[in-house]
Length: 79
Image (cartoon, rainbow, N blue to C red; front, side):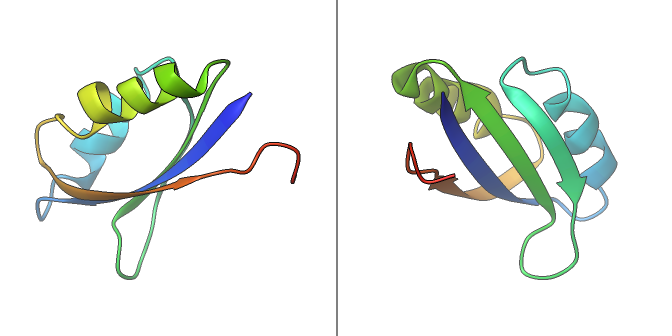
């Protein structure tokens, strides 16, 4: 199982909108608003690493009101 943690910056005041939309993406397993350098943390999982990458690029990064992302991909077997 491929796992990624996506740190998200969104437009000011749009955190709840983005969080609600992230919850509708199948690969998104957890979403949390945060304080600090990033606005939102999303944990994503998929059986195939390439499919997970595609979901991040085409479903998350292209979402309305998302300004930037930083993706951390987990190392399989180190959990």
